[in-house]
Length: 367
Ligand SMILES: NC(=O)c1ccc[n+]([C@@H]2O[C@H](COP(=O)([O-])OP(=O)(O)OC[C@H]3O[C@@H](n4cnc5c(N)ncnc54)[C@H](O)[C@@H]3O)[C@@H](O)[C@H]2O)c1
Image 1 (spheres, rainbow, N blue to C red):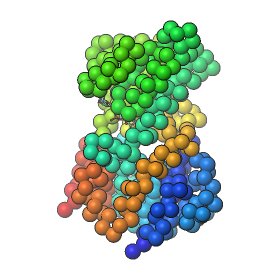
Image 2 (tube, rainbow, N blue to C red; image 1 turned 180 degrees about the vertical axis):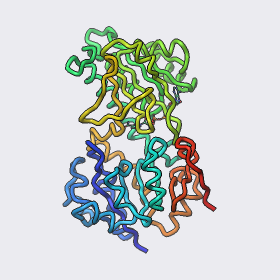
Image 3 (cartoon, helix red, strand yellow; image 1 turned 90 degrees about the vertical axis):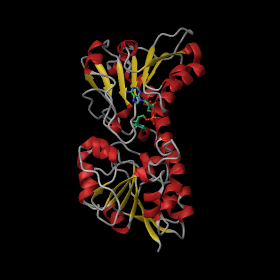
């Protein structure tokens, strides 16, 4: 039976991305009727007519889209204003980040729909739908950090980039996965003095081999690591325990020891944050100032550059959407070890151990 695939306009604040771009939906012709909410692609540079030319039908409201579609292909998790449009026939496919969001998790369970958390889709040991956004977020963390260090943001008034060849600024990155490595690369490129902190000694060794004297590598939790966090101009928190709430790696005490005007960017906020007591910010209100320290925690950093991000996201999403359009898709998601971690909610059951642990909810198993 032909499936009904819906692409809504994202409603999270300042979110300009769209899940699938026109050139990537043509392959679904014949497998799905595709509905696109009007202006869904506008922030990413794609007009309704581009989607129509690719074979989609434009609908004028979100309500119409949710009524017409079975598979809702989103970028970000459903927002409160979308809750009432959800029903048990829906498969919600997008970054859900449930481990930090009890009300969303309960709503998806109550609605008895199916929730697929795209950030948990695996390819061996990798997370192919998280990686491209993490690379973009890692770059943006430095870009935002540079901006918040400016005098007008009440930052230290320091330029991270080196002017005369000397390193005049310090960047400390905690968590050296995809986000962290992108931040490190960009910071080294512009001539900052960079310290990388991780729990994984192999990652630290690789970084040392790659960047030599341009980087200091430290094991997380050591006194040296603490000191590097407290003395940096820009601290980037980018730790991840897949599917779970991240550990707190930048404490209140660390912040108390920082110089006024220091900038802390908590990239792990989408999973709940790795800075003690952090609150979520938006692109239009991007930070709060605590004891003179600027703390920024934007859960949709790649949303700042939707033209770049949507193309990357859509390119990587295609084959997983394709998987949903076959008759036995559910069995495939349930039984494939790369796909099953993403199948987190089904018919009132919570299927993710990590989410159940993080939110103290009951874990269920499919029989
Ligand atoms: N805010 C955004 O827009 C945005 C975008 C993309 C990713 N993210 C988030 O950024 C975070 C990092 O993502 P990633 O793709 O780089 O993950 P990743 O798995 O590639 O890397 C995470 C790293 O954290 C390290 N780590 C775990 N616990 C640690 C600890 N206690 N101390 C030091 N290091 C520790 C791991 O060893 C690993 O190297 C995740 O929380 C992810 O959800 C946010």
